[in-house]
Image 1 (cartoon, helix red, strand yellow):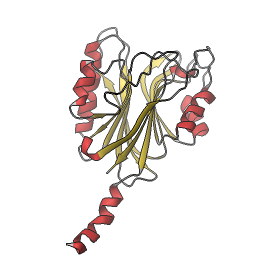
Image 2: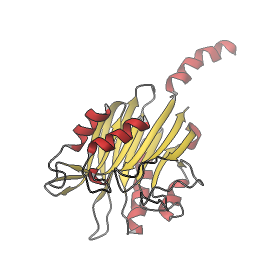
Image 3: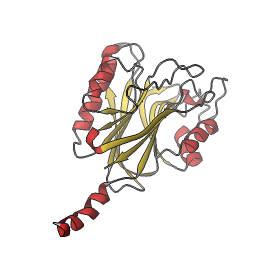
Image 4: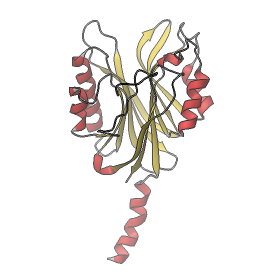
Length: 253
């Protein structure tokens, strides 16, 4: 028996990760509450968080609003992470959507449109299979931003996230983003059946930035048996965006 365990231990350890730090941040297209477009401030928040995986929402790519700036290339250089953009829609001469920044490799990726009610803003889920530098097991990561008014569309976002995770049952998964829903919302409850919600039951208010009164930004992981939550907290950044960033520290077994 001891010999068998000795053989198995390297295999088990190969799939395990040390702490995985995940940040989700609605960056308000790079504009702070002072009205200034400043990606360096966003990058500073990310670097200071030491996050391995960063999910960003409200990302402009080469729009007139941001002066034609390539947001992802800029943040990739400033944070020393690999960058991936997921277009939700064409906007203001460029593109608008979600993004991921990763310390490691991006193996596969795709953008999946969330079914949207007539007249509502286009929404999507950016899906990527990644391999972190200190983790031999691939991880499925999804970044998303749901509608702020339509409950039907939020539920559609939750259902799509579940389907995408179910399509890769062998991969541990992380879902992060701005759900525009409080913890008691039915869309969040729909996810809670199969996902571990980081900091569930703890006040993690992320909006509005000056005096946060509600949590609408989340980091989830599944299956719950594969992950241990070490810490979940809201970072005290009040200038760079109209949301506060949420950071979770997880361990994958």
